[in-house]
Image (cartoon, rainbow, N blue to C red; front, side, top):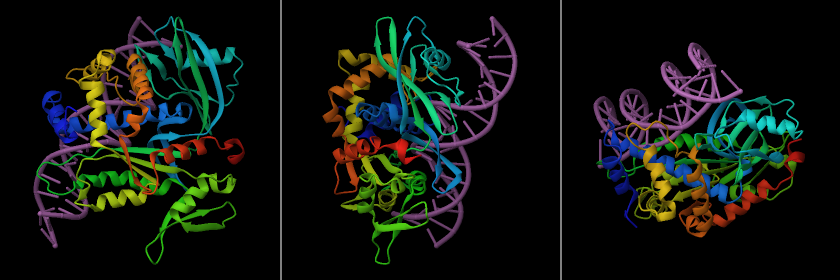
Length: 379
DNA sequence: GCTCGGAAGCTGCGACTGCT
DNA sequence: AGCAGTCGCAGCTTCCGAGC
């Protein structure tokens, strides 16, 4: 590994890449945050949730729709799925082109308002591209296969209400601080969202145990130890329990300063008790990603490095290495890498809570939720 | 030395506009 | 209809001073 810690790497980025900015460390930190997001997105895609993912969607608080929060990623029930084939001769694929192809294939677009996003523009892909929206759903498209002169596209309609949300946070070490950084205050923003999104709410008992409470539509409720109740909801088929349930997942980069010896700092405790699942993306993982793909890639992945460097440089015109905007060829290489190295990628993550569970359990829970009969549940 | 509140820098992105 | 440019917001991040 080229860098023993991400904090050193942040310094390298600050000194080499961002020295032209007024505040190089800040810019480097922001970039590392973007990388945490990119890694998470491609893991979810590799796990098979492409058609469920949305990006930066406004999410209403449970029982309080006046307040919404943009959530990084969410998984939504898909109510319709289709694939279409379009001609690749144009380098530009607009929402309109896809919508026209859908009309030609007798896909019912009634009640959907068109958006003007481009799925592909100048070789840059728009991930989770929304092409139309109705009151209760979004219509999205993505590339399924890219062969010869034609492109095969996924088109899928997602229900507005998600069943899982993900928030990614990167927090660095501050200069001169001996303890955990106070900037983790900002991560509490994510914690707040996590605590207000789902119908499964967290409460404390008199003796300090964490319990969950969930209301049914008739006003009755269930209270139980939280992890038990969460599992019960995830694996139930009870419409009443699932209707407005949202699993909340936090992914934070480990800056090596969350603990003093074996004791978690207050900030980490706050995150642990706010998210249903809290994951570390380890220093080792982030370093490996950066080293293998961005700094010292093997020949076949060199192109990713070029895209990354051209996106994070003085005077760059357009960033093509973010969770939304991604260079088409880099997208393919990333998917190949994640597919070929899935085991290694999964080892980049540690589960902080629930501490009895493993990453494979999270994957199972996501699949379980994805495969529910949402049409019946949300009816 | 620590916590808290506020400030500041960087950038994606949607909305808007005006041109072709 | 497509596209480029502008603008402001929001979210990402780190920094810093006051007060204890």
